[in-house]
Length: 456
Image (cartoon, rainbow, N blue to C red; front, side, top):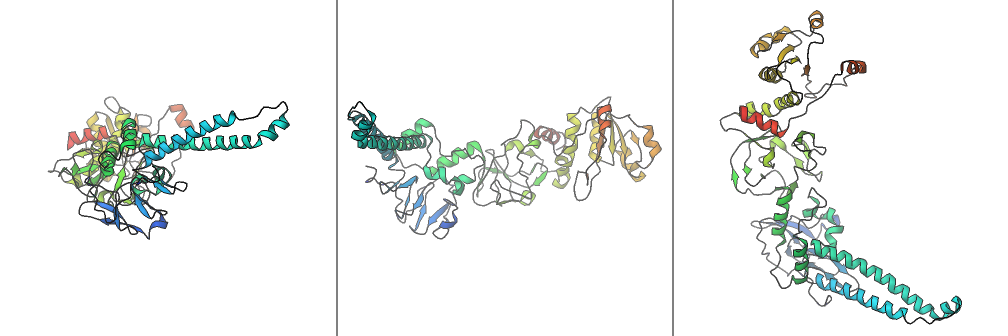
């Protein structure tokens, strides 16, 4: 049955009936196959065209070099059966492995009962040497077929194939998934096993729809078209984006290629998004596969989770609002973390406008220490309590050891927000005075949204 059953050959000049609105741009990225397959565009979908078969390949299909045909849900080409194992004969192949195991076990039982008993080992080995050889061959064969049976049982339960497991890094619709363990075709073990054995009796599976639904449950999805969009301006992670936000937890990136995936929640500690150990920047960076550039603020659209979006009123100019969710939140976050407020004293080195404003609003005693007296008017305007010049040594001696917090806002034009060189601090000062040194890159989303509600 395995040999004489159609494995699922894709008909020549087939017009695909896929209606999911999303297809893979390529089956795989193997360099050796570049001369025979290329992506093509239909009216709505991005498909892969096989130049040898002159067809548009459905998702999960692959061209077999031995059969010279494209096969639906291609698993592998079996050289012993001289046929491909695909969507329509995978169940028969599994039954073939099962019956082979049963026959081998039966043969081992018959062979073990045919041994001729002898009192000495030399005579026993001489008489039974062919039976012993046959027993070894049967046991080795049983191990091989049992391993294959177990592997393909797992494939049937998880709705996966040998080709997808072995060549995952080459298959576009799989290697762009952020989680290497994610199976986009898994629909439940019972459903998968039922489908594996009855696939010829039920409606042809539309793998693109299954894939899209499964992926949307786990990752943020980039698509070449916009669905259910609402025109709102957003700022995400301090970057200004004049972008529509899709209503189903993801937005659309027109600057990306036809199909990309990005998981915005992988490895992120709860409520500490700014400390993600595997950060991908929204600008001057690349996607997970380290090839496609991320355009950040230069994108027409950007894809984000709703959790990472702060809504901004249309009446506010974005060039004025953006600093609140970038430099401002960077200052606000450590102030909240270390409970700056009433009955505390804070010193701001250089003139950090937002640090002074936040400190005053929180009720702390703010002293600003810029490098020159020219900043005096700004300091008074921000309601700071004291003004000192850093070059006046005598003034600084008078306020020594009188602050709970020190905010250092001196920056350079090259490394914004960070010292231009390594800062050296004597260890004894930290030990005797129990000082805490910390830094701030950006704030939490809860803090961003609190600012956006208060000011925007």
